[in-house]
Image (tube, rainbow over all chains, first blue to last red; front, side, top):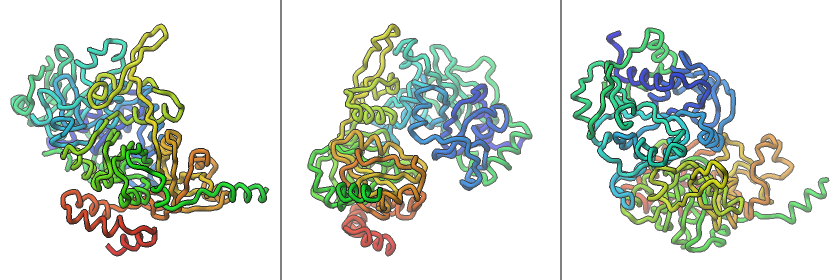
Length: 253
Length: 293
């Protein structure tokens, strides 16, 4: 399986973040998280609920970029209902991050001084509500020191240090599952719930990850390489879910 | 039966033009705008505000080019928002420019908190408790919110999302009758009903203005999501959401969206854009300008 591309390792790692989810809504933001959620649903998590990105829950798993007529609807989920699902906790979101720190505080709001940012980003969107209510993972296609920062400029998504300060009761639904980047896979099972490297994608050196990260990373005791997709998973990714190869453009090879 | 319908219709004729809506607005008002990002925004009303003398507005919006255009033309003092996006271009360029110039007051919430604020206002409540915001910078930095403790045995603490009471709201629906019953034929109403219910003055534009008796020929009774208690003025505005999407009537105009976005980097292009696409008053003149671009 030496011809597995980097983005396919990202897909596998993101799909693995959803293992054990059962019957909940997955909201994957971006192309690779979308491929990953569809792969998980087609393989080890058939109970997952996915929308078409608008307001229809899809019973089937159409290819990325398929026509609306290829969707078999199993339900209706406009934004208001999605918010209800957020409050209920039956959801796992995979978001991006303009900045992320060692505790998993995430910034998609603004870079620099919030009053007058050097770069206005998207805005808080649903990050505060997502992170305090249900499982959250992050996907970062460009792992650099500019993204993996010592301290985020604005806290949109809540990290473990902030959650702890709220107390066990208020933070009981806070659950950062994984951070997947183009270099490796991370969790928050390090000392003091700090970010820990779980696996490196094949071809990535630990020193490279450390060089591209502004803070010290803990290491999993069994730190190894990200698992490769099986033959069947690779076929599903390439032929069923992403026949147009949209995922390939998302990360550097 | 027909007689009753006729009497109702003549009694409750709320039709008006975009400029008549603008005449009911005032400097410094807090204005809610329906739709979501670049989806079903009341753009003909937004353009009417853009060419008016109104200023110092506070906007509450799931923001797209509505907020961007009004920021670009100096109509806005403050924006209450959770994000600003054109969908196909992730970041709203004019809003971005205004933020980076430091020329705007802002209050930034989680998108669910905005819904809660509108819902509190709609229910005449000063606040609603919500978990979203706890621990993030929304709680004490980007927005002015306090917390509230549950009076029950759990004694849990929540954000007390303050009511977002609006002086006025503008929304765009697919079909409406002249008394203000609105029909949503698209995939999502977004929060248009809450914008109306949170506002003192409510204005709805529509793609097609039809007889009440025709509404249920266009779609099921479940598509009648806005009723006339929620609306003070109805504007017939064909193509009124352009260049945002208004399915099933029309998709987003991607080429026009690119043209609009490019004006954020070029004041001359913005001036030309305003002259060609904001100045035309009638729906037909606007549509012609768009067709000739």
